[in-house]
Image (cartoon, rainbow, N blue to C red; front, side, top):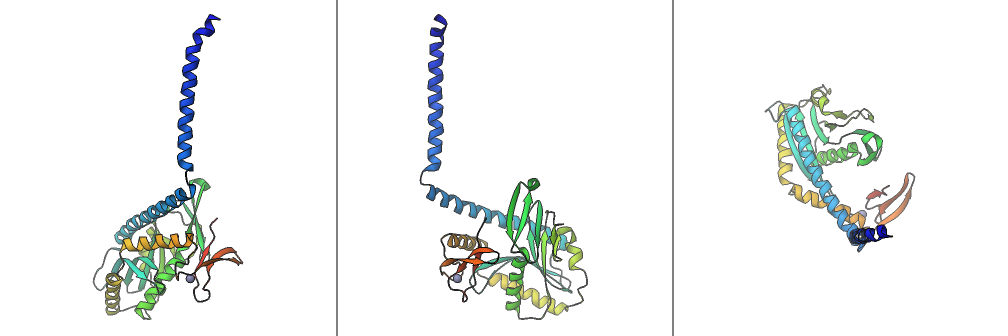
Length: 277
Ligand SMILES: [Zn+2]
């Protein structure tokens, strides 16, 4: 009996401590649960902004690698212009990482700083990045299609028959599972651009092309910050069911490869967005 009496103060302290701990846990959980919708949208916007900033910073690192490997502009031999922001006919901005000009043609280079293993082919809409022995999988928009848009815009602005080539350059990822010719490692970049393409352009044409690129870079009128803002706005629009291209309404459509969101103004506007997941 006496032993139990001695234990009473200890038990009381234990119970009080337990109550305090439970209360703290409860408060923390409540913080997360308050107005979940607001919390969610806030988090998403913040996440997107950070991802895009990271993408641009990573791009800058890739750019340095490309400049290092190819060297910069050398009059009459080669010309390199980085970070050209272009606006397409829908007012959408996109960033062309590098354009390298030599006697073999105009090389439009898109650099990717992904780690891990990349899976994809020319026709797939999205590629897959696999990390941590398959534990993490991320989707990325097919960079060949992305760079195809860049070349389309450049050709349209240049109005030229000069040969354009698309190159997707991965800085560190394992791309042995990518089945497309123009997707290479940074290690193969130099060799690739100096392999005879069977076409040749004169030093005058090279110089003219370089000046056009510089002009395009100066006159895009869009800064990197505005481009990031543009990308963020586009993601926000899609989330709100608005077509980022024309401002129309997005409607759910059934396609052969699954459901997707399409613009209600189709066929005038051909914007589509695959449903995630
Ligand atoms: Zn639209």
